[in-house]
Picture (tube, rainbow, N blue to C red):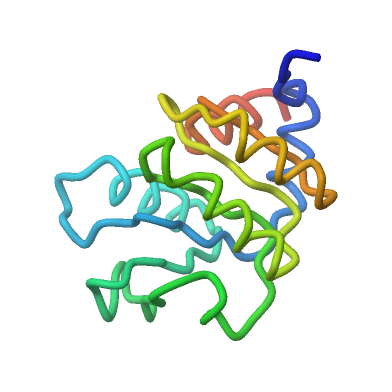
Length: 140
């Protein structure tokens, strides 16, 4: 069976009920898409937890080397990594009990989606969380 993202209504519900959003691959460079998207989500009131082993703080938040190092619950794991790294991220997301594995626009990994779904997570691929949040806000 081919992968299908949740409907726009389901995505809006996921975002409405989102707790912490861990952003894997969040860059500390302000000109990078990951930074701009995470900053926009933070400005909209979401709690962003940066995951980048090369940084100590991004967007005023403590940065963690990996998902397993985060000492609090994570609802959404938002991924800005190339597709070949996503299965490993999915395994870590499952290990910490995340509810959603979200692969950003342009990122597709059927293996990561299968891992997520096998562990009871919702998988979203090739969608920008910032764009989806904007759509959800317009439809309120």
